[in-house]
Each structure stands twice: as structure tokens, then as C-alpha cells.
Amino acid sequence: MDVYATEINHSNQKQEHNEIYHLVTEHLKQKTDQQIFDATFELKKLSTHLKLPKCQNHLILKDRNPDSVSGRITLSVSCEHPKWRIFVPVTIKGKLPVIISTKGIPKQAVIKDRDVKKVLLPYQKVPKGYLMEVNNVIGMRTTKAIPPKKVLRIKDLQPPYWVFKNQQVNIITRIGGIEVKTIGKALKNGLEQEQVPVKNNSSQKVIKGIVIAPNTILIP
Image (cartoon, rainbow, N blue to C red; front, side):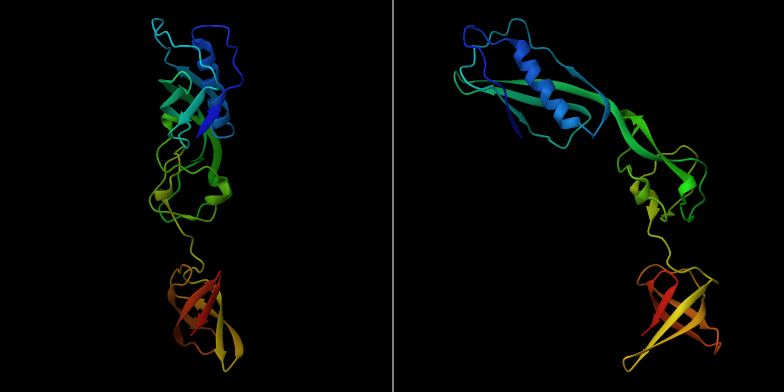
């Protein structure tokens, strides 16, 4: 990612460090906008003994980690004429939006709206694989028991069941282009496209079908 500074006054013989800091800071503001909240930037200052020749064109900033919006990163600032390049270490601090549990959630439970909420946490406290949107969590099942106020991660969740054991389901049978619908009872929980046994309420027969939609089983 390249960012170019605005036109620089050529009257000075030496490159002002503050112009470099300004370029870096403006880039960081753009980079973190809507990504991290209450962001602060700690720039490691250049040595006062570093005397760079005044750049005769635009300063060029390069960010080799454009997706990193928190923690420590290093940016390079360079000049084409005269030719020089320096590196500026930066620490980005701020808060990230995460989804946390509002109460204890049992293993294999289906997550409901009241079970979770979005909050802002300091990035140092946010684990890898964290989730940011409530809509991506509602309806999912937990892979383990989740304690209260726990940040939810991708590995803590798995796809929701589309049919539930001992609950009523629609049974669809297709015969020669004709679709016949009956009512039955699922005999086990089932995910999308999973084969499950189901009892036909009319015939009382147990047959196997494929889960094709919520509360709907297709008999091949």
C-alpha cells in the first residue's frame, strides 16, 4: 500500500521529521477507520542525530501489513530524489468490537439473541478467531460450555440443527414428479443435508430422509 505526501516546501536543506510523522499518522487514521475504536498511535521517534536530505518530490509510505489494525507494525517512508528510506515502528492501541456471552451457555445449546451482546474490548484482550457480528452467532450451537462474559470465537460454534429430536417435521416424498407431503416426527437432531430417521405419523413407519430445510425432511 503506497501513500504519497502532499507537496513539500523545498527551501529547507534537511527533511523535517515531523513531516514524516504526519504522513505516518494520517495513514494510520485511514487504515484503522471503522476497524478499531478509540485508536491511539505510538510512533518510535527517529534519532535526533538522523539528518536526512530534504526530499525533492513526494514522500512515499509503504505498509507491508495493510490488514493489521492493532499491535506493533513497521512502516517505511522513502524518497526517490535524493534516494533514502527509513523505517518507523508503530504500536496501534484501541478497542475492537466483539461478541460476548451475557450468561453461561451450556454445551450444544442453540444461541439466542438474549445470550450474547456486542461490546468493545482493548485489542490486547481479544483472542484470535473472535466474532464481530451478533447475526453471525444467533442460531449457532456451542461446541462446549461457555461461561458468562466470554468472548465468542469461531471454534466455539458449529452450524445449527435444522430438525430436532422428537419434534414435528414435514416429510416430502417425490413420486414420478408428484410431491407428497406428510407429517412426522424426527428421531434425532439433524443438520442441513444430514440423513436422519423419521417416523411417519400416518403409517407409524420409520424411514430415513435428508434434511433439506428447517423442520423439513426429503425422502429420496
